[in-house]
Length: 164
Image 1: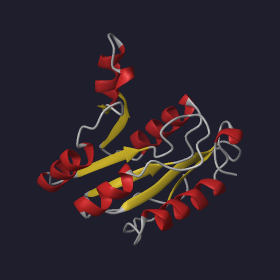
Image 2: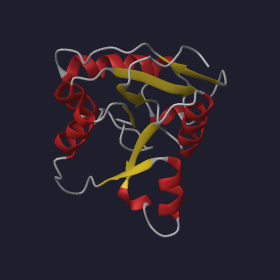
Image 3: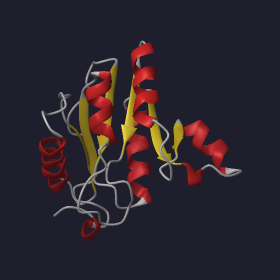
Image 4: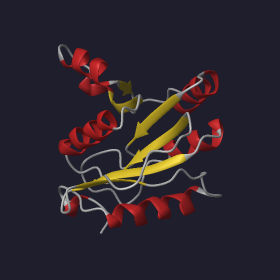
């Protein structure tokens, strides 16, 4: 483990790189080792019987990306109301290569006024890195560039499927 989780009671883990289902396994194990209560967002297609029970046990919550659901607004309200809430979002949005990130993490951080914590596995070194909490940057483009630079410091399970 490289770095320590922040002491903040509310923040958004931005998990990168995300190129394999092993990313979830290593991330979940890191969360358990650090005894953090983190809610993880995943595509709602995973929530079929009996996998939905496993997802619930692991703290995974469904996200429907096929239609507009005011996701950012509803989660921002939950962050505002909660005394403690830590979320994990993978802004690559898929395990396949994408040239840009999904912007939900950024808008959620801004709207709920909670910090972003970059975190991710490095399969080459067999490490898991957690960066210090930081505020969302002035623009999504700046923030995305920062996340991509962090992602480049980690060695993905399938490096060809992420930023290099």
